[in-house]
Length: 128
Image 1: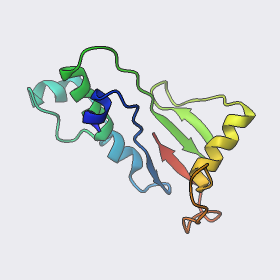
Image 2: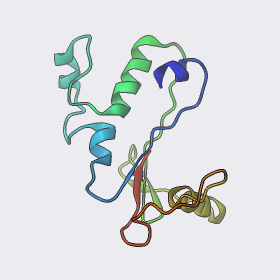
Image 3: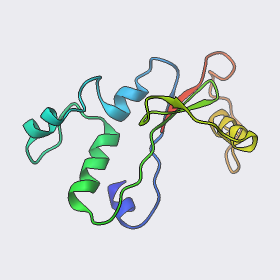
């Protein structure tokens, strides 16, 4: 992922699954782990408890020139929230709302229409 980002590609991390399955934990690590003291204790390494998103961001910030633009968005019950801005609900236009719903129901352009086995039975959630 980091190699592709450095090569000029735009990349997206997606964790998909039902509530309580560990998406946020995988992406960010356990609650309270993203601290400056954890970073200081790790020295030149990466804090062991950190999830995928902060690991990638740290690698890019330590070894790259230029700017880093990142978003962390949670989609829950077809409503998008900005995880880097106090879980603020994002306002999407009607067209964008249907795009979000289509992506997470497996009917996005170019995607197959197969059900996930949970569609219609459990709320869908995703962290990006």
